[in-house]
Length: 248
Image (cartoon, rainbow, N blue to C red; front, top):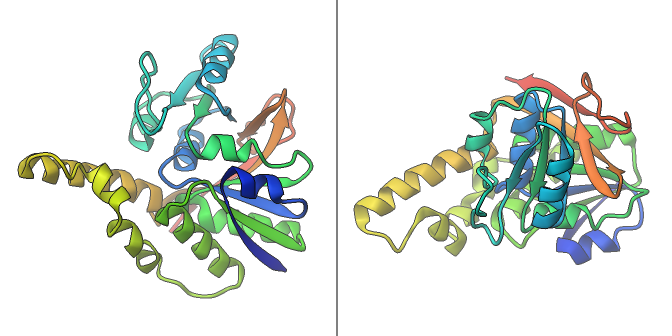
């Protein structure tokens, strides 16, 4: 079995065979996993905010999670946040997701390929799901050139190859990066900065949590949208499933 690493929309478009895992750790596909764990009927992944609004308007009771260049959007209460998702009643509802990295990249993958939405919280389950398909090639696509997405890809590669790896060491470049400093609020006052760092650490810990829900999310296209839902609660066209289990 061959494992290939790729990056972004161009990397996703270039894949022509096998299984494809599109990775967005902070935080698109962590949000998806927690939405399904909270009882969401399905997740629809769309490339634009306008599409998200339009689709949500056509599905009674649906919820939008969206951001634009990592910033909240006026009129949309959930801004790509696992924490907000866990405090939202999503039972038997559709979550419509739009992000700057993950959702456009996963929509760029060829329709005929096996597609998975990956993040650290579902990394092991997703790797195992890929192995069950027995593809000749597994392509791990980092949605963005971000240390956490690359760390997740390297962790999944290790799982597939049955190698032991410490995910904390893989994440070390994240904590040393400008991206981390940005999320932590480096430019604020010292006390405010410490509060921001604490909040950011809590958000990051959700995305890398080794305990809790693990969902291998195999995606399909429906009406030109990427869709996935629970195995026990199938999406409307019954073409996509997600297996949910508890990890020790």
